Amino acid sequence: MGLNPQQTFLRIILPQVARVVLPASTNEAIGLLKNSSLLSIITVYEITLHTQVVIAETFSPLDFYLISALIYLLLAGVVSAASKRIEARFAWSI
Image 1 (spheres, rainbow, N blue to C red):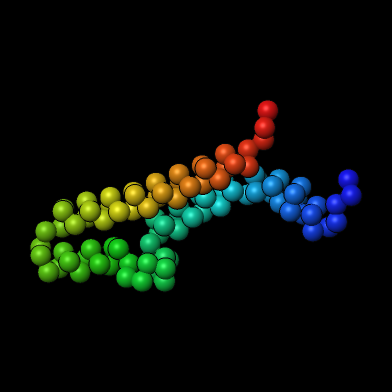
Image 2: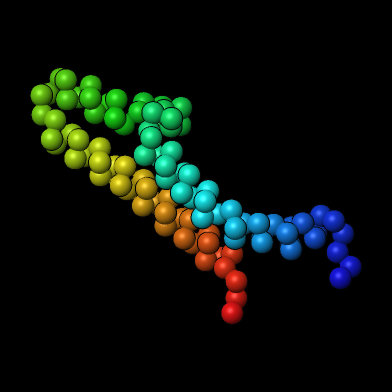
């Protein structure tokens, strides 16, 4: 084909690897998001911890747990939608 090793990797091997690895990586990312204590480094002040602090001050747990659940749902939805777009980009053409 006349491709050097770098071109071979970028144009042939990497797209094939991405198709196989992307679904598992997406599931792992969503799992990490659900286990938010592991993501406290990224989110700086963990959502669940913040919710518990606010509940201790206001004594209104239902409202704040619903809000934090919606935030987690929104974040998981964004990660899932982004992965679907990326998976569609790497999908085999039939």
